[in-house]
Length: 379
Image 1 (cartoon, rainbow, N blue to C red):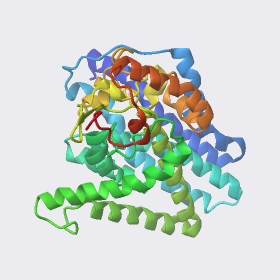
Image 2: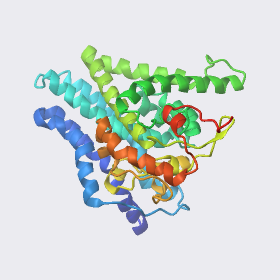
Image 3: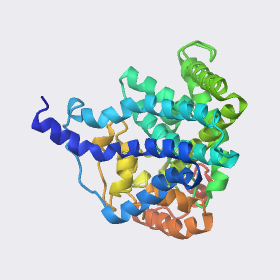
């Protein structure tokens, strides 16, 4: 029999299960076609932007003494997500390639929606899982990333991004005035090479070659090959193409989020190639309640970088004097990022205000703007 305390914990965790609403929308889109194929993109971006306006901000912070056992109902959604996403992705591939009532464009639109699921939810949950010590959780994270052909994101995120965020060595720290359409191809190229180099360097420090079986890239390539093979077996070339398309949509969403999370924010250079420690001020924070439900508190990104091992229910919110604040939640901000002139009009003044507030002693921001290593005057 469920105790009252367990019921209360489940009730508190339920808003973070709203991602499950995407599953029937995917099924309805595949079965009915027509306008139903737009339901998923609207749910992920439009509806949650509206809900953010209606529900406002959540600035409350959880008790940091809460144990993993007490977080069961929060963690469970991330643990069950891979089989759900796997079933939706490959079940939809089989269905749309074996039915005649959907046009080619309807099929493409359906898999744009599937990409919304695997990008806004799947990659986000893999991000939560890859940070955990539990090996089973890390494997679930790897499987989710393989399902969007972006397995190297784990190495890039853990071995590059968290170490070098806000410095020229981090590919996914968007530079001041760098539009998303320039950022995206750059980060696709640089994150792949930087992640491989990071794993290669780690093996070299152990006296091993990059070809050693412990290199996670072997696992990445094997899992991705398995996913591609399954898509082909279920749907032929059309199934393979649809699977690849949803992966592109998912990656695009991930890098949109990466773009907005650190846009224009840099760590202070201390000389000799050294930078200050990562602080909450080096990530954009967003306390918007509804989009944090969908994205399991990813928008409390300032605390995630400050304390990367915290599980998502325990991530803390920061006030403007501690961390810069986004004007809207991620769904609205990612839409804005696709329009660089509007993005710069909204965000560049915020970056300049951030610089003035946290680093009034820095007079020349030119090297930071260019993504170069600054040097003290006269050095």
